[in-house]
Length: 521
Image (cartoon, rainbow, N blue to C red):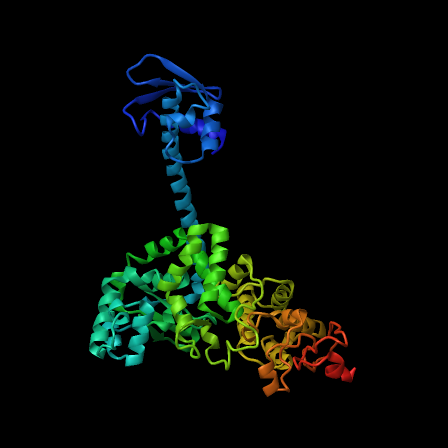
């Protein structure tokens, strides 16, 4: 609050009293130089310097409980009770203004995220279709026992989670339906922010396109939405069941604003960014990384809150449940990597991961799209826009290609061949463009390298993924020095960093360069 704002706030006040006494005071006059106060029932006025009051307000902090003792160093002792009562009232007014400011900020953030998560091309008005009434209760009756168990686990149905033995299918169906329809506030906050926005649109009668992004909504893992096939021109859509609309209608927006107030959206974005970067990680390590980041950026309380988030988040449950190699659910894994062999068993330990920054993870986690965070990624993104893709198309292709590089271990040459297929026939990459693509491929973090990129591995002079290289010697997948791609459209001239003859060979053999690939030079 500036000095001018402070004066204006004083002028808004009328009478006020001590928090811990019966005395009442009134404001007589306010000027930049002097504030005049009087005790109610008395004719004697008290003049105090306005700037001194302001200094007291600033130095004591917004504490909300100013006492006579607090004000004595700033004003005469006779005026201290009146000044304490006055500043308590200023605090109340200031907090009201702060609440209004925060409310407006949340509203603006709400609208910005809505634009981010729910672009117009994602939606289809269901009023144009002749849709039959649908029932979540009926859908539960058609689920297999395994599907029901997954539904109960993800939603956090207490009766099933706490059961010592698996209940009957009928009992599971009843318990899930009762929990979802009667206590939606218990599981709504567990949904990611994007899914809450999508759910809001579905509750309002919209169909949501599921082919729009490579990163499907978490809703797709739950049985609370259903597939709605439309004509081929408009893709595949999902919709909410009719018997859930009424229960969810009044609760979705409060759930969104609650997540914004708690800064849970920041934590959620960090988590997605972490998984997009490292692919797999132990639950313990993930909590440690995110706790430190949240504590540093948003205070001790949010650092502690990370544990709570992991307990109630449906997103973290999905990333946990599909970790097939870890039946104890101690490992988190991106769903797109669930079929990757030996993931989480690399030569590098879980603790040996690259340094991760708050800002980088936020850009990695603003799904459905990944944002570039370094020069190599930005150059590749710019190449996509230069070749005629719109910004949204460029983000989509960037995300698809980023994940494709992470999903499968293959030589750089094959990866680059796949990337070239994205470009229109009339705008195929030149040799210079191939250099940009190669540098981008080598900069992408790999899950089987604990979140390191091939470039980072080369810089660390680590032996990358030896168990895989030994089994597949023809796959020099992590070498950042060569694309392996033979350009059919011109001569290929790649920039290659020099490797010392006595340094470890970048191919991962464990031999010195001069006794391995260096023999050819």
